[in-house]
Structures are given as C-alpha cells and as structure tokens.
Image 1 (cartoon, rainbow, N blue to C red):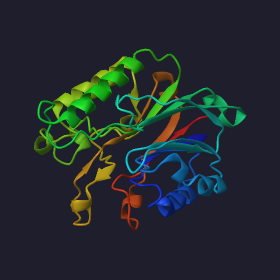
Image 2 (image 1 turned 30 degrees about the vertical axis):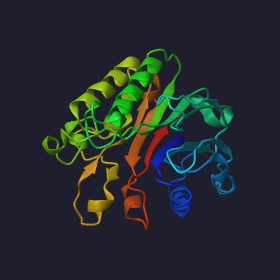
Image 3 (image 1 turned 45 degrees about the vertical axis):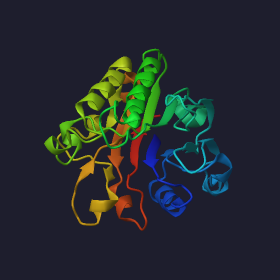
Image 4 (image 1 turned 135 degrees about the vertical axis):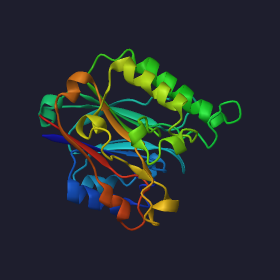
Length: 267
C-alpha cells in the first residue's frame, strides 16, 4: 500500500511543527503541500529529509503561493506549469519511480494551487476572478492530452457540489461556489474523465469539508467548504483503497485553515 497526502499548509515555516506531527501520526508516503510561502532555499528541506522524506520537489517564491512535494518513495520532478501565466509558483509535477512505488511506478502526481479568485465573482470588475477561470481553462487544455496514469491534488479553491458547502443557496454568489466556477471545473473534469476520490469514497451528501474560515471556526460554527481535492485518472482511481480528511489538525495550535487529505492505493 502507498499513501498520498495533500495539505494547504498556509506557511510551511510557521507550521513545520504541525507538519512533523502530522507525518508522525499519519505517515503518508508522499506529502503534497500548497501555500508554502517561501523561496526554495528557505524550505525546511533538511528537517523533512531527517524524517525520511528525502525526495523533494520544491517550487517556491518569496512570501506567497508555492508548492512542494516530499516523499519516502523515489521520484523525479517532471514539470512546473505556469497555468497562471504570470510566473507564480502554483504547480509541480513528479513521477514515482522504482520498486518502492510498486504498481504505482510511473504514476504522475500533479500538485497544484489554483488561485482563490478574489472577492467579486465578475471578471469585468475583478481581474483575479478572470485569472482563476483562465487558469482552469489552461489546465483543461493540458488534461485533454493526458495519456498516463495521473493523480492531481491540491487546493482547487472550488467546492463543486451543493453538499460541498455548509449552505448551497447562501454561497451561490460567493467565490469558490459560483455556477461559473463549478461549470469551468466540470469542463476540466470531463477533459480527462477525472475521478473525484473525495466523493468516490465519501459520497454526497456525507459531510466532507476541508476548509473553515479563521473567523468562524472557533465560534463552533460548522461553516465548512470542500476546497481541497484529490482526483485520479479512471484506471488509477480503481487502485484506491481509502480516502479520508484529517479534521483534527484544524484544532491544533496555530493551525492552517485547511486540513489534510489522504488517499491509500494498492501497490
């Protein structure tokens, strides 16, 4: 069995202690982080290597965004796509290698941080919203050409299903759940026939949220959204054994506003 985790950590240097605790308790073979918020030379590479995650692909920038994939299973970095088309560090892709990867040898893991899109769901008055839709369109053109078993994970910043938010009607005009975002993400899903592992293993309407606002979580208002995802090529999805979200991390001291997801694969 091989397990892959994804987590928007919201500053890896600030929350390295939480990463260490998560790895000690859950021990995924591969961890994909988003919003590392540091340059590559600032990434806690040695600390993670000391924990056994010696294989690392880090795509960072100063203060914002950034993604990193670390692993106990050998891999090689294969891509850094600029779907934002402005040089921001929002993607890194790796290929699992060798006998440690078992049946997953040759599998591609794409780690992505899709833009949040600002506050106003109108590209005419909010260029960030337009950037988000264009990002997804570029991803869709890329996915249409895929011919290898691929797992794409990360913070998609979209909750696609009515059951993926605490109040569907109230959030229809709120960025992350608007019809145009859901439609655009749906085109991306169709381009490769992606299987949404979160809903394969935890079917709607079962609660499966991954993000809670800092403003409301500690008021014990369960106003969550499912913004983080793990999607697999159809044949790869058949090899999944389980999928879960680790909500207790949201209650740790100085937590990220996102929680990790973990999928286990037969190998």
